[in-house]
Image (cartoon, rainbow, N blue to C red; front, top):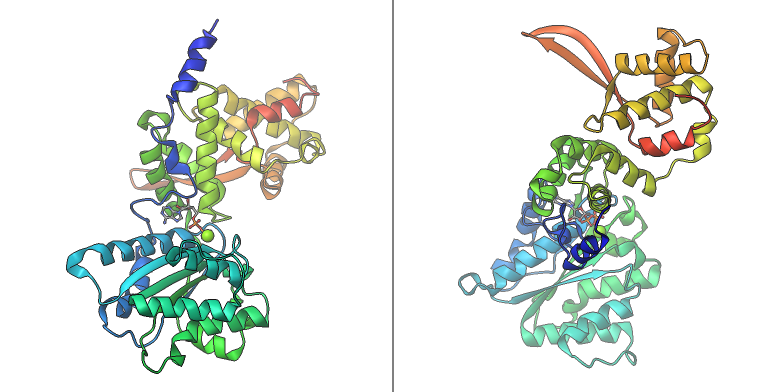
Length: 410
Ligand SMILES: Nc1ncnc2c1ncn2[C@@H]1O[C@H](COP(=O)(O)OP(=O)(O)O)[C@@H](O)[C@H]1O
Ligand SMILES: [Mg+2]
């Protein structure tokens, strides 16, 4: 019997046999290197160069960043903001105007009033929560920046929550054009980075805003499966103990998540699988931990499996049993699967289907997203030996599947 006190004390001591540093998986963690986004960082630096280097930046700069969820938009801009601040602090490269970076998430601060007061509170600690119109707040902010000889680099993340009508557009316009009213100081004091998920964001803006903002748009494209794998491996290297994961496990997570392209989900899945391995006191993350974690987040309805024709259920069952039997494997060859399927048919006194039909079932299960067919070209000494197909399950746990299809012998 296990000494439970020992386990509890280990829990309190916070010693993990899986994690080296769990904070690496937190959504707010900013990695040292942003793999595959160096180009974007360079683009941003180039674009904003004039506010660092010119004594009198002629006009504020604005950039729009567009891309769907989990593509690294927030982290790239935060990294850029940090780099700008570090650059400004180093005495040798100090620009003529001090640049301060602000990152506002508009999902949390959904009105201009909230956005502006939270910035102003940085300058005036006890800034009153009420009593000003938005225009007055913009004027006040611009005045403070001028007096202090500062340039505000403001990132409005998830701007779609803020720009919802004509009024909110006008306010954005006032912020961009605020400095133009002062004839004594024609330097610009505000630059903007607007992050949106909406590919049509610009189309909804009125013409004045459109022409101010449409010059620079950076579109974030989806990561490929390989890129996702490299990002995950990097996270695993920093956050997990080296013996607790294999490249294959990381590849499986990349392959499961790349169609959605959401890195946040990929990292979360790795973290969940690691947590599960930890709670089961396993010494490493297994494929089954990944499958279980994935199915917890995206459960497949039980009926999707139990409503399948019996032979397809047998095939799934055969696959699940083989994967449970050999936990070091993430996929099974068609030949092995067919053997096991035959065995199950025999035990249940059913005539197995022939090759063509068996293959047809595999295609169907794959189309339903229940299995994945991975085709490989076989080579020996430069000669092609044809193709082989291996089958894996991603979207549910093999153990749960066996529990669900429990109405026949195997
Ligand atoms: N190129 C990358 N290298 C390392 N981590 C990345 C990269 N791109 C995204 N991430 C990570 O993925 C997660 C989601 O990124 P985030 O910037 O929040 O996406 P978005 O803002 O596009 O929804 C974060 O944990 C982030 O650190
Ligand atoms: Mg974001």
